[in-house]
Length: 428
Image 1 (cartoon, rainbow, N blue to C red):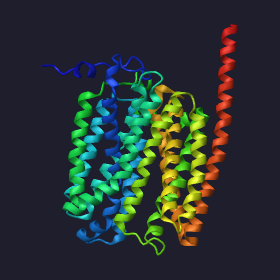
Image 2 (image 1 turned 30 degrees about the horizontal axis):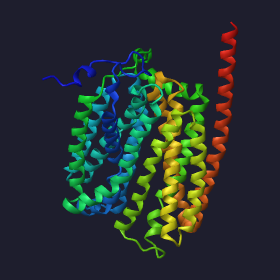
Image 3 (image 1 turned 90 degrees about the horizontal axis):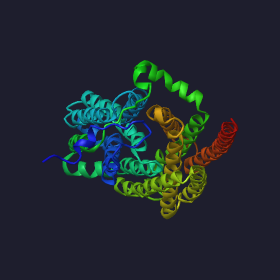
Image 4 (image 1 turned 90 degrees about the vertical axis):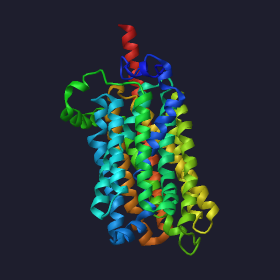
């Protein structure tokens, strides 16, 4: 008996922004599988964070050396964003995604069977570099979705990605309690292989049919700068994303210090449970995506920036109240996801033939913002404790509001240009 999915695999969309010929190719179950894949890929770079002490103890290295694993993962992921994600506009995407995921699984297995620090570092670099498959999947969801439903598709896939990031630490802690830190990587490696094979089976083929595939890899990479120069709203939305993630990263880099301190006295398990409150932020991804489909991306962005400011107000009160801290963290994470999903829906409409490269530019800014916010948050904590940390987070959120005002002017200008061109075309 022949599977009903097999014929769909051999068909490619006639245009990179068009859905595949058969609508069921991107059914809700397929979207959910893509969301799971995104969550697994993204979460693989966060497994190490609760395991650092166990890693240092077993591999007999200093805590500082173990902590370097986190940095290695971030550096490798950033390299993958710049060097591998643009391949989504050059190669057949189903094959690219599954290949990247299988290579990421190789990295996870390398870490899972590491007998020394060098082997763990190698596994971490491989996993970080190739787990950017998630950032090829997100624009692919927009490409394969039916017209008018790309926002919903991006929102659903991003919900999986965000849930994976937020749940990774808790899952890693639980598995480590059962069978040690290496079990975490081994289980994740098996899951990565299984999901990659499932995606290969159910996803339709998708290839960019424009001139990009004939340009060559070097020209595609150089085109990243050209895209950034040519699209002002790519720059404004990249700035919005970087600033929003910087603001929330101030929180992520210091929350454990506050919660473990004398005001709250929580242990690692308690801090992890508080962190899970952010999972609710994944719900905002679907809301923002649906608003974008209705032409309300600007409204969703403005509401999210406002929520970010309100969230920091609650976090300020969280210095002495755990309830206010949880409320503030939930609101701040909702805000982050709302800005992020709105940004992606805006940039994907700038040039449907270059979505992977647009995403590479945007996500690079996004993670540069995260790294900068984390570093500044640590300095603020050392300088003035939680009060200085909140002041920094609020200050960056205010900059976010200014960036939104700039983006709004660009949006109005683009709308005016579109109306003028339509009028001239009608007159001709």
